Length: 290
Image (cartoon, rainbow, N blue to C red; front, side, top):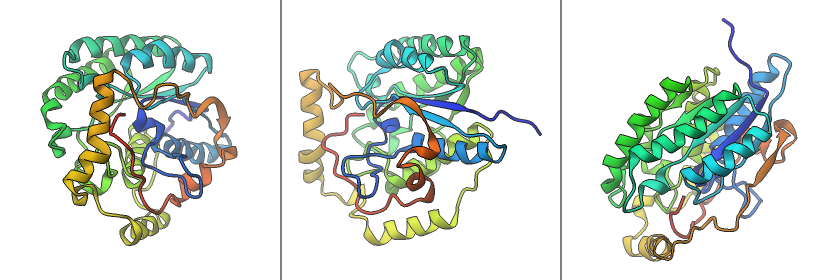
């Protein structure tokens, strides 16, 4: 059975795609993330056919749909990709006056631009926030937004990465200490689902993944649910709320970590992302802004 082998992948979005809370070993303040891991999967698959993958990551923490459509999409098109992933919207929906239908319509503009250039679009919906008491009030908005995602994908022939329906993301071990960013285990799971959505065969569990999970159980600090509530408020929630009130983002002034396409196999974090060596303590991110 024939299928598409991609050659150039560009990731767009906010902190989830930037890779926060998926630390690279021996590289302080450096993140892997599900997009890096997906690039590695795609590159390994392409090499079976004698090809390779180039990858760029334009995602930055705190970015919203307007940022992705107005800045990241044009930036991606300049790189001439044949695959673009888009995961964004959580930051928008937490605004008091957020309109999920209007936000989805704006996002559709970006998908339309990408598809007009023949680019395959992997369009992710949002995580189900029912697992977190402080995000649960936004569940209705997220559900409406996600319903629009399926319509956008149908109208523009995009591929849906359905994270809302993945029950494993209800496990606290999938989330970092701030309770809003994926842990390394969560990023691996998301990359696997992304590969499957694209029709790329990839084993659910490998020897490296099993060893990695075992090491996490031994060496990782307390799970998010074990972090004392007052500590979580002081370290994560209050700084996040203060930034929101001041109208600033944790990503203000930051640039994409990989703005230009590079061959995946030459990127220094590629081998670590593939082999499951991103082990050890999860970082304590200050605040939960995506």
